[in-house]
Image 1 (cartoon, rainbow, N blue to C red):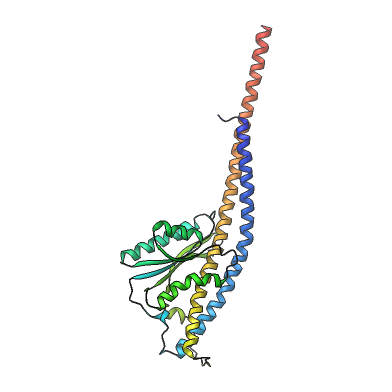
Image 2 (cartoon, rainbow, N blue to C red):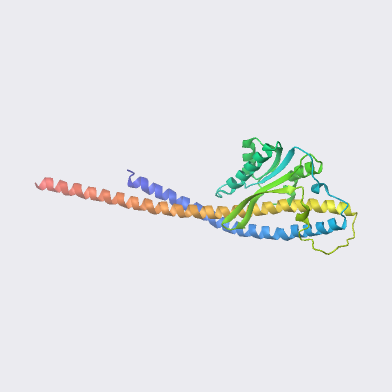
Length: 290
């Protein structure tokens, strides 16, 4: 049985852990709000690009961008978005489980995979399973910049435009609400016509192009794909801070419960020691007087 000194040491240790988890919870609350604002601010940009691309596509139906063509290849691309840090519950585990299922599905079809890792956790996982990682980016911080993100991802975009891969898939954690995040593996390329034309409307638009329609469409669709990837990263960051806040709150509550149980054990041990000492004193007094 543990002595009173050992139990006091355990209580002190759990109290220190509780302070750390409580501080991490409060930091995650602050970062979560900013990440959610950043995520919502990115949505109108991608929606506007999609609408303009749809209008230009309707005005120039004879031109088909490489991102909308089907390629005949036995290689696929996979962009895996995870976090750089842990302590966020099962967030990374869930999305990497979805990635594993997608890898098995592609391998069952005889398709090899070239991967791009965004985040330390995804990079480590892809290296462990032996996937071919063509590029990666880590430590993007709490305010990611598109210029740092696009370089590694452009490897797969260029490979698809050249016809060397038949599809590009994007895996990330979608933010639903503070307590719910959903792992997603969705097809990024080839772009589906209905996805681009969903908000185009029924009106015909007339544009003046500079330098020409094809150049404008090429640039817009590249920016559209980049915005989808940035949106996925923003969703994943909002999910990360939400999951970490929930995990740290649970850890703080559990630490409080353990501290309460240890204090109860400590009081029982202390009471037993006091009772034992009193019994020894009474027995000694009785032996002397007898």
